[in-house]
Length: 195
Ligand SMILES: [Zn+2]
Image (cartoon, rainbow, N blue to C red; front, top):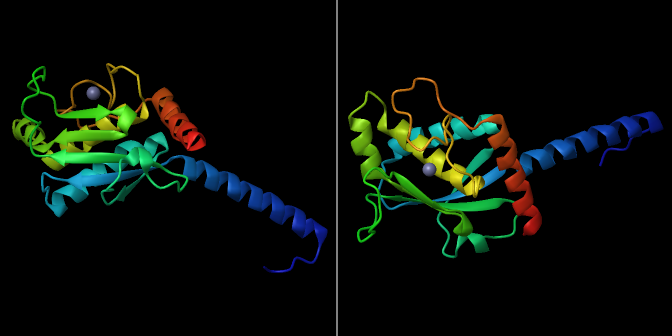
């Protein structure tokens, strides 16, 4: 450590360090680690676009997404590294045998298990009817499902990324409202305290 010669400099350094620590804490609290299982074999080039879209939705909410490899154990038993871990499965199609499934469901989320599923063939079918990049639609559906994991118990909204139907014709990217963003950051902070 560099020596500081005067008390004034020590004081300002301490203030600077405190500000830095506060910033680091705020940044750390708003990080979410998403373990990706690409069972649908989405090609890397498409995935990078989808990833970019997810980040573009999450960033204005003050949340940084860190993508990670699948875990062998449930994400609820993920390493205690001071970060919230979620799992995302990309499946080619919705599991068969589900009796009460709506025809247009693109994804599912189970907040209690920290896990979401997105059905990529349905996303591709839907996107094909619109002049949109399917990879961007995939990213929006993923952001929506992560929203369910980070806003547990909250219903869909009439506007923004938590609308029940993905906005295909919109050129303006839908996002989280200011209130949703605050709740997401609070959820991330509270989950860290619980752990
Ligand atoms: Zn939904």
